[in-house]
Length: 399
Image (cartoon, rainbow, N blue to C red; front, side, top):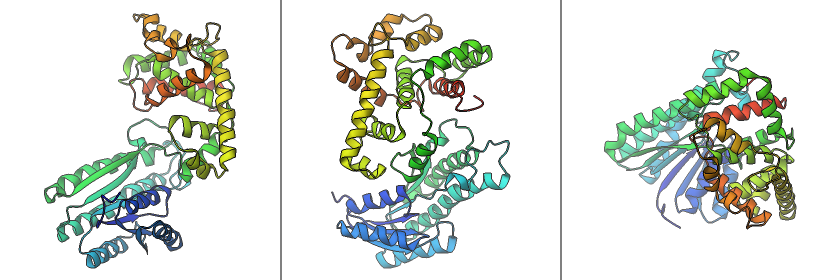
């Protein structure tokens, strides 16, 4: 494909996973890509890779927090190519650099502002400079900013980065309003956690070492029954939050996540990437740094374990199943709803008498793919139920 043929693209922080992938994508579609970063060795390697694949790339050392370096970098592109079509900034900090996992009550002001200064500050500097050069050169270009799902959800111990991400979206709208008359587009990319990035892989390994037992939800249910305040907290979220609805299909997604956490971390990563996010086996090999044979073995073992647990526990597909949480919670939160009618709307339930376990597993994954737990009608209720489960099994101290 060459829909970016003759376009000039500048990428900041290109040594990172996201910006590097964006640069490769621009090049594959025909753009000439200027890749920049503080580590010249890394961006040179990226440029070499792009050229090896038949693209056009130039590597430049640029600090995306340095105003003069940013200006010089973009100015030289316009001077050489007489236009600037696309600018993307993929800058990001490691969690340790902005106080990740630290509650707002304990986070220093300096650490809070660090996330804002780097994430939002750098987007301001690069977007402002890009807008100036696009206007002055008469280029009807596109400026791409990067934020994350933190701006849309409620996540503890990320106050600095959450604020920065939300501010970036406001900045994007403001600059778009200012330069839209010049036919310049300013677009914000809001990405959820990307499992093929180094930082997410590190987090997965860090927090995924502790495997859950298959009865974790049973333990959570008993804890809720024994702790009236927790039970009431869930009811309050359901009654007062605009995202406090209870949906059976969202709980099935929640259940899938809980059961997947019984797997060893590499099996869990392989399963989620392949069966939920539709990654290819080859991509998973690169992410996990494993051979194709190993990845296929991880997938076979993971699916076998998941199906065995669902076969024995899930009352939706097995009348003798021990877990009835989907229907029981639906009875609690939606008492006026016809329970059987609600269940029979699900292909998973309708197919339980006709299909074998592999087909039922596929129906379950299709349902999970179609549900967005972070932004669904019951996202707040799901969040507190998830934290309740983690508290009940001793993974966290407070809900």
